[in-house]
Image (tube, rainbow, N blue to C red):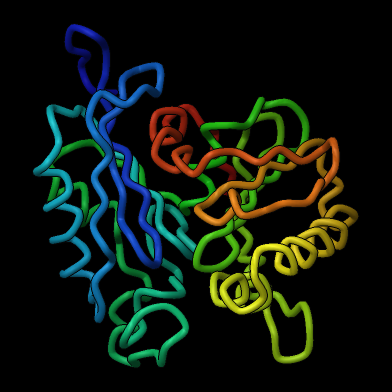
Length: 254
């Protein structure tokens, strides 16, 4: 744990999405002490360019003692098993670049970014970080994020379960959850029809997880206009940054 300064330990929280990379510095209570900075996610995006974007964002920030980074995809022990958008040629849902796919596979994000920023660092899936900001740490809690695609994180009494890429599971013929309820479908269907589709998704996943409570965040959560049930809470997208503090207290299952 970093040595504290007057005012406690300051955390740089960075939320990496398919369309934008956002960050701010947070105090011990998860309150932002700097204006949020957003940098559009550039493509094509090899890991080296990703590191430079993170460094550019960090350079705009005041003092921080540690860093939390949330990334899309399967992140295991700080390494990228697979990430959905960054290996594409021109952004989410465009053609994959085979060279980028290989460059991102098993990339040690935590070691490389920690060295680049010179701070203790924790790299997790972005939904896992966002969930850390809002869970009550009681019972089985699930976090879904609605952004470019569908993010997911599961917690049991506050301990983070091994990550599941629900986004890639088939939901309809030739469709995964990512392509069924992702940003492209929101644009095509409009908020009303898309919200009805999300209601069916929640009703379908409720018996799969048997959660005690479910949280829905991400940039598109604000577009939901249907009642999803007493066991579902919609949370602000800023949780993706604020979770950077509470993520350091998570017990992580392997």
